Length: 212
Length: 98
Image (tube, rainbow over all chains, first blue to last red; front, side):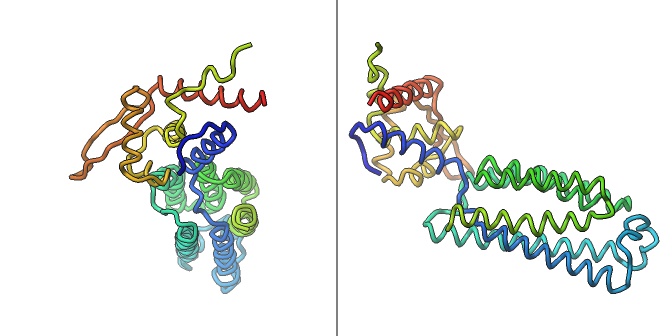
């Protein structure tokens, strides 16, 4: 960093840049979004073809009367499927952020990263708890909707600390979640759109805008 | 008409001090190492500018221990924030007048 010489234009540019750099997490990679989207599509395909398809079970029947399927472990298989998708998506995000930070010579773990994570975790953990409650009460048809809504709220929170696209991604997920709560028969479809397609689209957007 | 450079603050003439104030106006508090990495400065250089800002009550310093490690954090004072805002407005006026 150079010192001195009054040059108002450069001064203001420096100020803006330092404000950005010290308050925005820029190591988030669009590739994380694309990867998470692909994981979600695979997870949805597993649910569709193996968990439901294998036994020829109609999703609608299951959502309407989950108690009748208890002996078939469908709820358990779906939860495992979802957790695996979540696990791989998180691993991918950590990996791609780490890579982006290393390439640009930044530290990944800073005060800002911690603050971002805390703000992401508040709605995410609240949502996680509600979903466990719904699971135990056998109210399965609202689960995909709640996942989308609480995840969307997390992203809206995260948007304050990183690229503006994340804010809009969050809003998109919330809207999809609200629609899914009305048309519960299609909730797996909305889940697939929200966590799969929308992730891939926004991932590409972030990638081409900030990494291209 | 008011002279546009009237509000330029002598204390912010240095780019480094501008950098410190920029960071402290969007972060409530920052520690020494965070500032150092952000502004890419050496310890001595950063410390001398922080000292100058502290002496003029533009920032306040608080020292505490996190476990056994001492940690020094910096915050902008209300007076400091006000002065910084005036300086920014003066810079903007300068640009608009040219």
